[in-house]
Image (cartoon, rainbow, N blue to C red; front, side, top):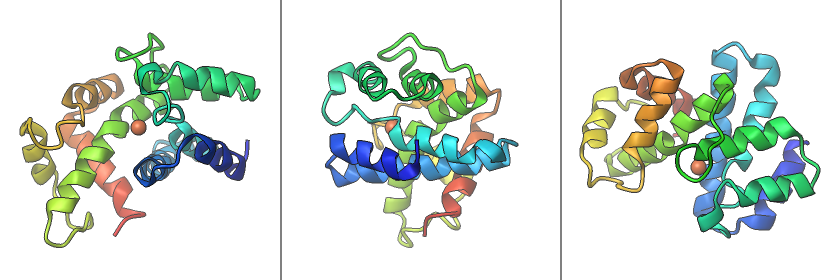
Amino acid sequence: MTREEAWELLTEYNKEEFHLEHAQIVENTMKYFAQKLGYGEEKEFWGLVGLLHDLDFEQYPEEHCIKSQEIMKERGLEERLIHATASHGYAITVDIEPVHEMEKVLYAVDELTGLIGAVVLMRPSKSVQDLKVKSVKKKFKSKNFAAGCSREVIQRGADMLGWTLDDLIAQTIEALKTFQE
Ligand SMILES: [Fe+2]
């Protein structure tokens, strides 16, 4: 599957700007981590997983990560793409455990990029460039801030990777800095 084909599929099921933006943020974050963690040759694939991970969310929020498997199977997409995208719903809507390091990264950064994005919006500079880990940690602990970003999922993702929360946040800020203002 090419990036262009993935974008066509994504925009067939997603019309809201917020969702398209989230998809691209996770796509670019995944590509950063592929390179960083020694999977440079699979960078494009990691990007596709990021781009398509929420394929079904806009239209089928109740069947998130379930409906997307059906859609992808119908389109004849490869099994590892289906497994990787669906596994970010582990312990939420599906019982598909993240196995590959790529899947664990997706699990960890999906909600975290949202939280960091919300922190950035609160800043006078509206920039991620000089954002510090401690600013994100503070908002992480403040349960009412961006309450939709599950702290439990972020922490579980860090645990799966065997990284500390601070390290996960630091790495994700570095990822965002490479493509955001
Ligand atoms: Fe997502």
